[in-house]
Image (cartoon, rainbow, N blue to C red; front, side, top):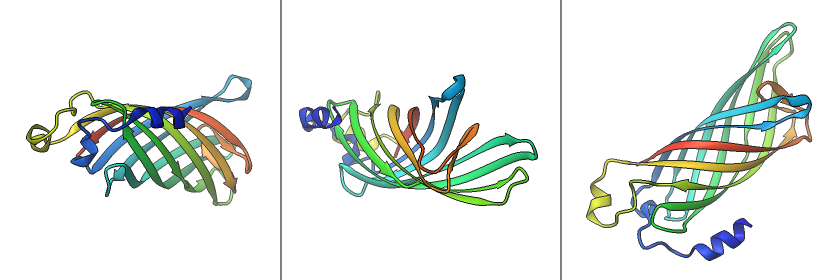
Length: 183
């Protein structure tokens, strides 16, 4: 589906990523879990685009789960690479893949680490950043709002997604929303 959308998109006349090379965002999302539970995930995201359609960056995230012996906390960093393509002057399609690394501690349990893999696809709406030429170059920044679907696989050592630790080998499909500032 994403490949069809990207193939049909073509190049928009005004592509803000040609000028806006740095993206800062807050991402929040979740997924349904067994027994009616909800998994919650959030991150602070930075992406640098050295080329118009390719970006590299990282997400910083944290979480907490309550155990009998106390709270277990996690801190993670997730390097990623993404491909973006504008389907119109204000609508961006993207695909992203990353490798989250996580450290967990507390809760009366020995410290542990986790490694996950993810693939994601989504859209971003740039409501005020569709002008080209001097108008866009003179703007301080542009807001973007996004929707993403992400498949996350706990590859090694489990992975904390509030309020649970996914066991090694588990995969979850998550939906996230983003608010970003493109500089």
